Amino acid sequence: MRKITTVRPYITFAAIIVYTVVAGVLVIVAGLFDYKGRMYDLISRVWSNAILYTAGIKVTIEGLDNVDRNTPHIFMSNHLSHLDTAAFIAKIPFRIRFFAKKELLRVPVFGQALYMSRHIIIDRKNTEKAKKSISDAKERIRRYGLSVLVFPEGTRSTTGKLGEFKKGGFVLAIEAGIPIVPIAVKGSLELLPAHTLLVRSGRIRINIGRPIAAADYTRDTKQALMGKVRAEIERLGLQSG
Image (cartoon, rainbow, N blue to C red; front, side, top):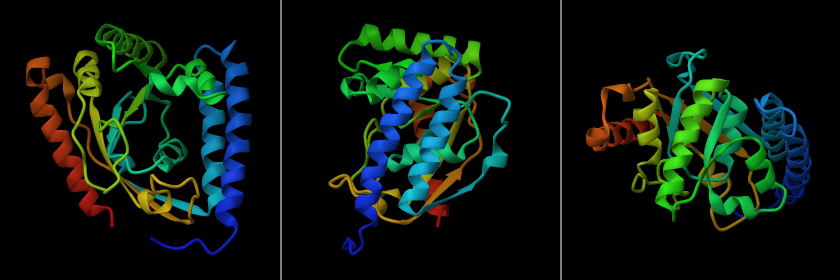
């Protein structure tokens, strides 16, 4: 692990707190009247780009031409760092919402902003509420033309290797008949490991694959879909430099 020898990571840490509080307040206020979440789309993109710029992080992205920008998709990616979210929001030109753990709602300002911006809140301890969240997600996708970003591992990897996949995002894709777009992200683990809050400068690479038709699968065959998506994310990871 590289030793931090400049003050930039500390400046970045302080700036992220300020950016997040300001953006969170703006999202909460906007959410009171902007039910479609258009203001959130703008605010979140500014927030993400500000963090990346302040930290000295460049994001390169390949494969955007694989995806129809006029159609909702469910993006599925490996998950290495909190920076993954900022990189995706900044560089993927879709109206994206996330699967988020219910516990995140407890975080001051951030949690309220998460709720007001209509992300998909999942209660992993309550099966019935989790099912309702997926049903609500289908309605939001249909009504507002949203795409969804899912980290199927459910948490960050500390080793860079893919963990076990959770089924929620796949059930949503199958029931809504929305294609899954596999993504591999690389570089973010080294810039913000799990054990620190200090962000290093560097480069994040995003490699986007071709959509996989979830409508070709059912709940009974979702394991096959999960295996196919997993294999594609691994393949893309090997191509991402």
